[in-house]
Image (cartoon, rainbow, N blue to C red; front, side, top):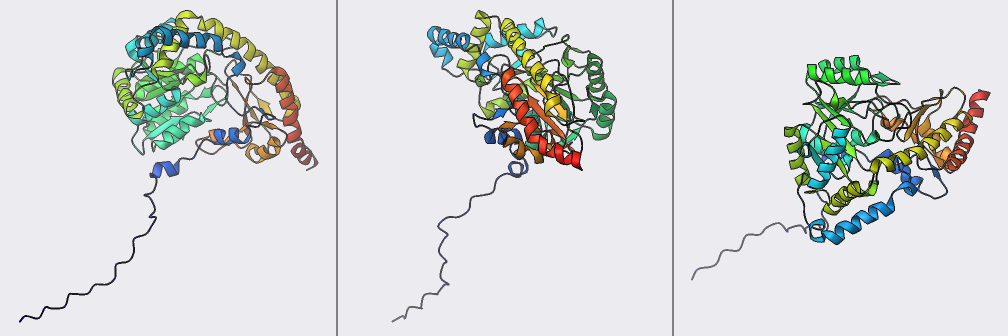
Length: 419
């Protein structure tokens, strides 16, 4: 009779955790924060606040009836098409209309040169995906549109600001940086720039195009505000200058001239890059909503968008002038500001030792708000700067808002004077 050997003994197995932590976020998600402007807008969303912080078109000027009629027509006449999937590149009717509008502005363009995007902000994300490897260098204006800094930062780019002045980028400084830094692209808003409202002169645009041609550089030319001109003559796009043809991406949007809620933008780019952006878009959202594209195309066919924009520009001109007329009484002595020929924004600089970020809570307590300038800088910020949006409020509201702004700054003015 065989005696069974005793079974081996093991150390007790510890119980599994009942709630294990999830894996961490990607490093890029941790490294890039949210938009400071969005954070400010959340704080200042109270109806009693006169908000010069947001870059919001005036909602009372939207052509709501015309847009509604366009949607009604599309849904009545082609509901199956309007509610179905579409091509990534965009609805042919809309691309035809966009190509015609671009060509009429002295930049010959065919429908196949365009990719419709879900707002021009998506175009920045697609370009970052198609062009940038982590560690690549991107050149930007100083200061620069905040969401562009976010998009390029999220792609892992190294962002370097190009020196300039009140007219914009210095082409000589640009060339020096291109030689030294070997960047992939230059991002610029040359017409009524966000945040400064400045416009790059034609001669500098030609010089920027020449630098890109000589040195090998992509130019991303963002133009969401160009149709909102109040004074002066239109300046041709950089994309229209010799040498820029095969290396400039032009971005456009209906957000400021039709309605931002449509989320309709587009990019015009050379073929290989445009196709790469289309592949990136397939991975992002497949295509921009069909019904919105068809409604926009119908609106363009049935209405005179240029006449609508002219009416909007007339109202915005009055609002710009109201802000300009009241700034001297609201800002401390020694402040300087620009007079934009169009767009939505005015840029101001207060004298030392003002810090507009530190001052903002005091000003918000007066139920008025601005955007501090510091977040718009890729490098060392000028903390005495601020951005004011002048299009959302009426002239009367602007006057009251500037009075409140002056009240918010007055304790600092008094302390500075006493010192």
